[in-house]
Length: 270
Image (cartoon, rainbow, N blue to C red; front, side, top):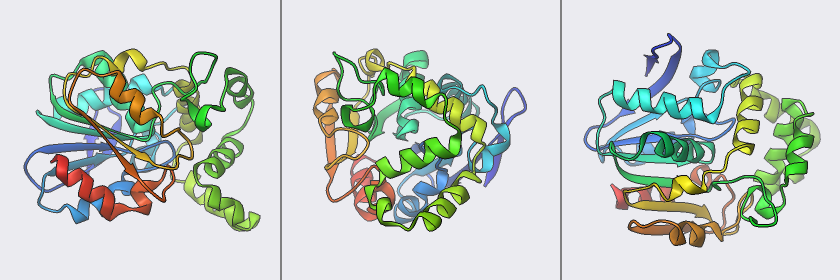
């Protein structure tokens, strides 16, 4: 458990577990490094796992602001990799963490990486006439993005959570609101809004073609936020060894829902 002091004096919370090949693991929007706690414990001794909290999230909540972008998160990742003198990194990003990985690759390349693992994320959230593999399985458009700019963080997160895990529809409203409020308290709300809209503005499809190390795509077989068709799209748009792994009976939250299966698939890559 450590705080990595950035060049601008902001602090990022990170944890290291084990020794050997470095595996850097990045969480998603409104989440924290804790999403990887169970898999890392199951893989004890298999590698050197480095899990950290993005700006405005968890232990890095104080490093948030209303101007945080995914590009800033990619710069943070680069500074962390260089500062910890990591090389031959297996870079794993889930959801927003995958966007961070693709943004990093577009800016810094793959010279310090040995593999990339993207988990259930599209390279372009906004759907249009030429792209139907974005957020909400093709249902989120530019008009929806504009409408979301008028919403506060609690409303946006509530809608997003229900799409992420449809089972939440069955939770009594008071209990659901209390649970979501508790989750939001772990984060800086201004940062969450800034990052949500930053991701909306991204089109990282060209960055996928810049991957020069083996790529693996983990995804929910049913798909809640994103279409399972993305697995084929990634394979069709890279020129490196590629494999995809589907997690059945899962939502976008398959890492938490099936930690043993996730750990087993990750161990094969390590």
